[in-house]
Image 1 (tube, one colour):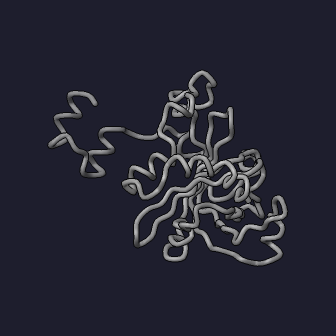
Image 2 (cartoon, helix red, strand yellow):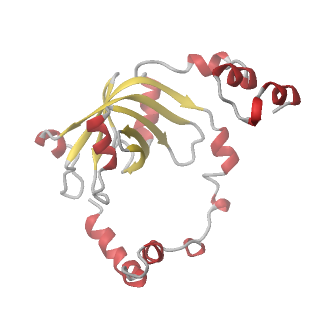
Length: 213
């Protein structure tokens, strides 16, 4: 923030669109033109190459941001306005699905290992339980309980600056898991010992194998 910008903003907080626009200025033409209202053939290639998508939803109870992952191509592009995401087994909190029922708005962020650009989609969602459709997403003999059907409102790529700065795909940036608390130790601390952290961690590898699909 420049000194002149500081003088225009009271109490060091931006509280109006006018202040925001004065602080950041206009977006370059490319940042505007890249956003379209349908899945183009080139955007489709990115979606089909992605093994990981983050889903953001909103409901009366608040916001939710949840990861989804599977082999590349697990998100199926049905047409230029529609894509399908299988809802695999998770922790059964169903926060995203609860929000979708109450507020269909949804945002997606697709990541591809080694690729700097990400793909962002804003739209609306429905939860489908058609048996044949769920069966078409079968993995290891297990069907998802539901499919998230997304109708695209807008789609665009995000430039790689954030991933470049974070060195997200740089192997030298990886840290050993042992440097962070285990999930069991977190639960033991939160529950004040009601959950045995060591036993939880010990059982987790088998639980993961048994419930991955």
